[in-house]
Image (cartoon, rainbow over all chains, first blue to last red):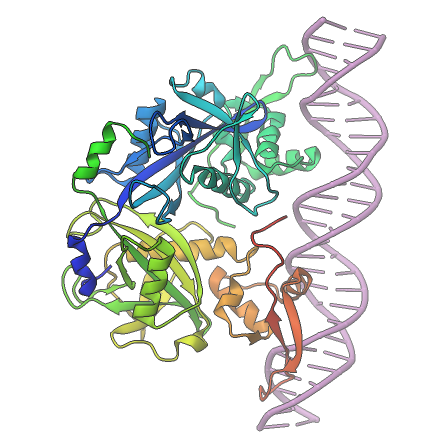
Length: 240
Length: 240
DNA sequence: GAAATAGTGTCTTTAAGACAGTATGTG
DNA sequence: CACATACTGTCTTAAAGACACTATTTC
């Protein structure tokens, strides 16, 4: 941005800006996302991600956290910017940009979801990190998705797949204490492919991100596994 | 976004949106970025990335491409969205969000840079992919950087470091034909660390991204290396 | 021929995959 | 005791790093 002839655009109509939050969790070993039925046009009766306009006095991250609080009753969860969607015709009501965020929570924190909201299973029709829109299902039926939100959720899956191998995001989808097999289940659900158990074990234990609690599972019908806890790395970021 | 009480915000003042473009190239085996001296306040005489307001009828990517064309005379270069910066006080004139893009060009396409523009060397004060602001230098002197643009450039370096090992971005900084050592120089400049030559060779030749032209370097004072060309992968995205 | 980098071949090291075998809970 | 998964140890395989050696150009 700089002072130049473009400046007079400030007095012209300019785009509106919203945030949309893709709140993901793991359920039945599959990624799910929270969507809400739209009561009116556009896209009446279709399902949309929770979102809202960015206020003049809040940052984008604050706006996303506010949406999460107001529409899902959640606070203090993993929240990260995803991408800004700017197709000219993405909202038929006018020019609306959307800064998409994604949030990750363990299923234990989504026991009661607000009325009108649905936890939809994410169906990924591509492999690897190719990317593209996904389909959403509830009780086996495909849900109609509003706006470009199917692209947004698709990009979340793409981002998670690219990130889970070197950034500690898998833990965000699990409760405080978890077994190695549960963690592997998260990785497999995100990546959409089975993982070699032995090397996953070794890799995780060698990563230094896990700290064993002395405790074990109870009542599992077989030898109980040790429960681990996530230990955040010393400094932020990835430092190879 | 959805129809709810928030809708009346549409009639309230809402943020302006700009795009800023971080145009990077390689010069003297170091990453450089194009910045422009600001003639007036705010940040008068400091250096800023080229940018401009997003028009009501263009996508974000079109806006970034337009800025690149108007302010650097470039067309058809690698261009990708980076991040959207939304600090409330990032522009003292008012609430202005900025969708940052980064572009990559070979130095050969930046022979003549516009007057008022400077190709500044990027000084990275951190290692790995930790991230954070960078410093810019021209002729050894540190340049004052306007707005949050030092953070933007820092995030470009962070993104490139995370991406260069599995996505074909290194080639965008080289001319059509290049030697393996030149390609290694690009990777080393981006990563900020030396790379094992033997394994880099093997890795690159095994990647299938290079196709040898029969031609060789000329007049280099030693055995000339073969010139390679970049062959884009079959499908988009990364598919492990 | 000296200097400098290109390019080849091979040994070592490290991480992943495969798999056998033991351990320890529940029923 | 049967069963299921946890956990350990070892062999194999694949990729990276190290390094020695030959090749080819300019000066």
